[in-house]
Image (tube, rainbow, N blue to C red; front, side, top):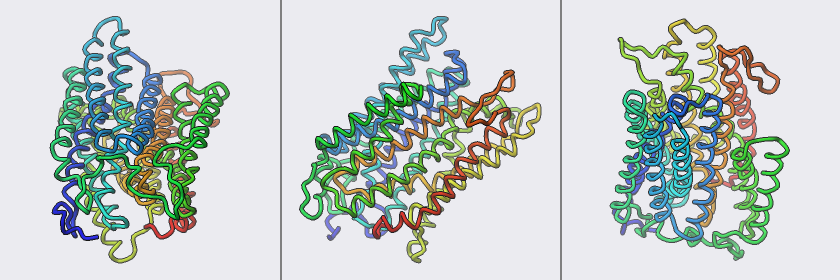
Length: 516
């Protein structure tokens, strides 16, 4: 197909639409990470919740944020298309941030009831809004390019840089306002960032967010994007009776087993139940060919390892924030850096390293040496393990003044490399391996793994050892009596996952059937 009629699509470099989506996602992530930077501190310092309860709320929130993309992806594939879904999601997220602002405005009262109700209302709007926004904007990045375009991995890395540029600025602005002025101003700033994201998208989408052939992307449902091979009957992006039975029945059974059998909380049971059942809904679609099924199984199997990655990585917003606040010497030339600022370190390193790693993938591809996605992701898990090993060593003996900022800085540097090897590559892989009629839905299922990882991150953060208490938490028979022991648990999880995935890579590569 010739692209000569589309001036937004260059034969080299990247289309202008990528930078529109980059800017849109920049301000949406500014909103999300600005709120996240101060969320646990707001709960513990203003709502007076203990660290364990705040950690579990944090884990439920960040988990549900990645659960609802399954709903948003389905609605976009079946009914609305990407554009409408993004806009509705953005409006809901802006509303959520403003409700958090009103919550913080009332948090100074002795009675915290109204502030807590508003907080939960704000979280609900943020959770559902993100579900409509996140899978659809991620899907549109891949649709800017022809099938099998070697620039997709690099494009997702550039897009990922936009995500993290917003995530870098957000804790500096919202974190400063929240910790040094008032938490309500941090939440208000996050809400204004979300509105700016919507303005950018609304006024530029028609001109620049176009396919290689010049047609506008995301206007209609994604079920129209392709047809199944071999004359198979398409589900049209919807669920068959069999799939609905699997979805509803499976969720009820797994939720009941986890809630009433294993004694898990409601949100954990829902998140884990959806993650276990969701992939089997799409894999049973009758329109899928054997090759399509094999490729989808690659995504589903790698989701298992993605859970371990995010369970460990997402300690940044919880236990690592506690470590920064209580165990780290944050005084620099007489100025005490806010604990929330550490959450900018990962994003700042991504802005610096993403172009380098993106260029590395392009150069390796030209030489025919670019490793397939599973190999890259196993290396990402290995860097995650190295980060926790580094801080475990630093936490063995903490001076009275607090640990050096070197330990958290080193951890975030290593974790950033790991994230760039795993997360943008995963987004690109989902786009390349999924049939077009299921792109947003499968992106939503991919986010289920991240949802589970985030929920588990909150659970693991609740085990953070408190030296002032006479008893210590236990995990899998291990007494967590020190920060060294606590961090070494994450070394074991991420390091073990890296080794297992590495040895599965050759089999997974065969199942990808030539998609690189």
